[in-house]
Image (tube, rainbow, N blue to C red):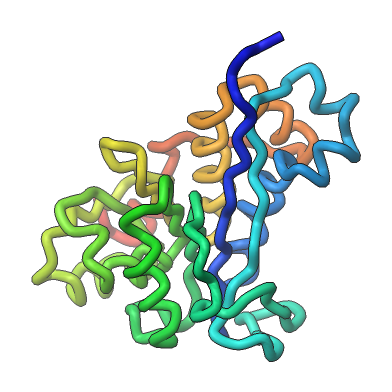
Length: 229
């Protein structure tokens, strides 16, 4: 039996009005197979690819009233940003129709408060635009939605961020911040991140349950389609 201690990563899923549903639900669908509750439901499927960690999600918003995403049903958060005092290990930031950091002050304050001590920060689509306003991306490499790429790069031109045009996803050198291209690329980022923290076997097992075809870091046809390369 392994002597490696079992680790439960607490993941904050950041919600706000206008967030793109698949930006958060795609990664949560994949990473959620490692949650403590689902691991108990599928012991035979996941048992052969067991790991010494679990990922449990908490949904946050600026209010406990229903949140209206860009599409899909309204959502109820577990906690407000202001009430979330315990340090999270993973922070997931989706993009949406408001992606330039001009979101609720409580979200931005949460990211500034929690981001420095979080183990990992994952951004999907224009979620990296939101993160850029906190200073946490300064001196780092990142990518974002390719249709919005030029606008985001122009908006952040005074910040020391290296935006990567052709990339399905990008991880910083220390593997703390992971950013993806638009919407569906969030699932590829989630797979790469899961493989990083659990190893290839558990990541493949989770992807197989979803019948997911995985795209690699450089598999990005949308950079050329949007005239970026």
